[in-house]
Length: 258
Ligand code: PGA
Image 1 (cartoon, helix red, strand yellow):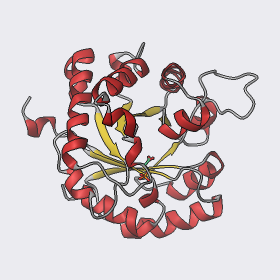
Image 2 (image 1 turned 60 degrees about the horizontal axis):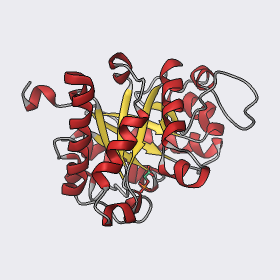
Image 3 (image 1 turned 180 degrees about the horizontal axis):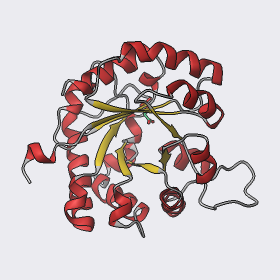
């Protein structure tokens, strides 16, 4: 397979985190749509708070934008106060779900084991998973980034089949770059994304070449084109810069022209 055959369609995913009410979600989508008309070089996903799903799914209906959630529980149903199942998300029009975001790991006690359980439950429930991995600044400075990313990736993918991998997107998100305005250089980002590609190919063979790998961590309108030009960076998971329609539209445009 040569490079052009291998080339994967770009994916631009916004991660709103805990921002926007349903009314604000509707307004945002109404204002984003005309700004991205005629761009078909990138798939667009908006990962919105649970409470925005209904409004956001209605606002994107009939458009190419897909809706994602920001977490999912691993049980099908039961006594898990405050949690949401894959079936609940599906029925509300959700197609994607972020699993293992560093804010879930750091603030809410998610471990590699629960990330694996959630990813498998999401896949079993018919969702597509955006699986996040990435090191913090101490891990990077100690020189263990590759080992850490390897462990996070392989633990999260335990029990995930080659067929299921078709519904998995990996997001490499160095924690020190998230929300800090400090972006990894395109070389640093490509280096980890290439490692992830290698690890996927070792585990799944040729199927690993098709998996989309996103970069996340202060991606914005000015650095997107450079990051997205790298061989193994197939898109972005974008927090801060996805909150403003103009900024997000600029990133989508950059992706659509690469
Ligand atoms: P950021 O967030 O773009 O604000 O750095 C990225 C993310 O956490 O997904």
